[in-house]
Length: 496
Image (cartoon, rainbow, N blue to C red):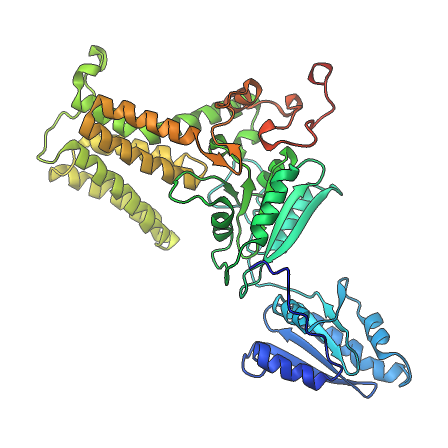
């Protein structure tokens, strides 16, 4: 739950009352990781609250040393609160006046210093979350380009973005989501570029989330914001690459960061955002266009290759005489459509098994499954060789899809088309393609038409989808994001 109306429990002047509150509220003395260090400074009790594992122990030791030295250098009559505050050499020190704020901050990895006789506490940011260092995402590798991908730490992720966009107008609005998890969620955007209406929608949706926690992080946030239902096609794009996120911010998109997740959510997005890859922009325009067209061909093959081949098998008269060889040369007792579905599920079984198999074994397992099992299935008459061939080609096309979510959605659509072709033949293929097209065209992703720039048609946007345009020629930001500042570069005379 994004809490805007927190309880306001003022800090009592007695540190013992605060200690009793901590025992009741957070289990001080029961939870081994929630600790307190008690000091006597200028004859006043000073308590330091912290959570083991979420803060840097080295800074806590330095803090204690600084506070203990106060007894040797200061007089009893001085203002102890000001002395302690001035002794804190950390770059982030905040005064808080409520117990609820202390609890929230300590559970987030900060440390709190409470002083006897004071109704204000000092909160110091010494967070050091456990996690891995930035590295290249496994699913978004490039031949050339940066190797620092996002990690499970929202602070590191925003820093990786800030490093690429050192603009004073870059904003990261922080929210806490989840009554129990209190997960940090941030909206990243360029203040003078991002669409104000979309920004207000996202703010409203995040603040309206009422749930105990979001352990699945960004996916839970997506389901609350987008309300996708049973639609299989992704309405937001995920990326683990900091350069991809920065590029979309500069275009006018809004990025949603979620702590504990190495992926960020890009909004708004269309179908064609899911078939673009960072590699296209690391090559020359000609090479990038070639890579893009190859990827388009793979995506198309993953969607229509199997139902189209099945249609030619069922109705050979549709084939021109020169390619009449397409079709099974051998016959089995199992219908071809059943073979296709079984083989397609077999590819999915392999993918799932590879995910849950230790990395050194997954390659060997894939080779054994692809070669031995496939050959044995042909030998025993379960599959004809052509089925293995075309299912493998469709599977490779699925893996060329940059977006995993879109790849799975296309696989579902492919299975539905295959079944329609098996039942109705040519009318089934035509009806299935028509229904799929109309379904995609009518989708909207956060009020953005999903099939832009094809429908509604925009010539400039459409050409930028088909061809990888050189950056010096990309004067305008995409109109789909409704940018407040249309120009990425000084406009030419014909662009004004």
